[in-house]
Image 1 (tube, rainbow, N blue to C red):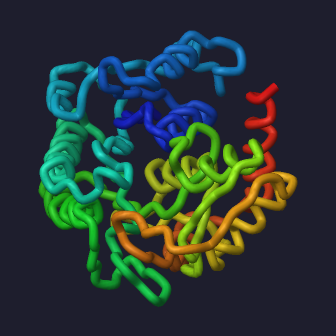
Image 2 (cartoon, one colour):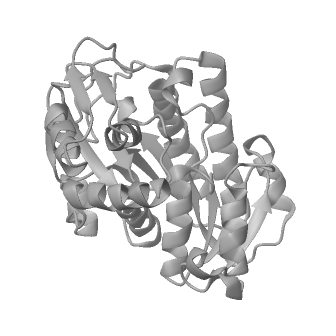
Amino acid sequence: MAVIVTGATSFIGKAAVEECLRQGHKVYAVARPGSAGIERLRAIKAGNGAEDPAGAGDGKLKLLECSLQEIETLQSLSIPDASAWLHLGWEGAGSANRQDPTLQAKNIGYAISALKTAAALGCTRFLFSGSQAEYGICHSPMKEDQPCHPVSEYGKDKVLVWEQAKELSVQLRIDYIHTRIFSVYGPGDHPWSLISACLDTFLKGGHMEMGPCTQQWNFLYVTEAAALLTKLLLGKAPAGVYNVAGDDTRPLRDYIEELHRLCGSQGTYHFGDRPPNAEGMVSLMPDLSRLKEVTGFTQQIPFAEGIRRLVQEKEGEYR
């Protein structure tokens, strides 16, 4: 099976490309020309030792340099074996840009263009990477069929993609899967993410000033997130919305305390009055009933194991 992946150089995108290759699928990785992560894809394509997850050097990985603004130009290419499209591209996903209405609104058009292009190329399935930000502020488990009340422009526009794409996909006769991804962490994450910042600071003996961290939270290791997205896209999951998250939901401060212990209790932290991000004081409480029913998902990498892997990687960098 051949999969087209947009946003292939993103944090989750790179893991998804490697997961598809590990499963023996052919991947057409779409990346913006000049993207900072494109060299890693070139290394995988060349089959450079550890950078080659599953024999990608034998031609299973094809690079397509194309920006999201020009995604419809891919319709002119001959990709006769493409059957599924994984859309992970989104400009301005960082917290600093989530309230920019102009930037965020552009992504709706990019996603719809990708869906139309997928249908034109003969794909029968399309998966879009939505977000828990679509739900807004919740104080109970987040279920896929509940009304969404997003706070940020980012969340609002992800909802608009769902509303437009679910109707368009029927006209295009393509199965549309809309995932709402919760908090993913792991190697390759942005250095300003909470987990990355804490790890780097603690291992260097520094201090982290935080908010109260009393809200419920949920973390999922990036390779498990990639495996779930791939399974939803390439398996037999019916069209619709799916939460993508881990099994372990608990107060965020519990996670921070555990992370600190796993860093050898180096450095210090203080739960204080730091303001929340663009979504406000959000509690992440995903209901995974639908995901488990369709995929049989059970979390394989507990938070402690994921952090141990990251600590080992960080300590290797410091040597």
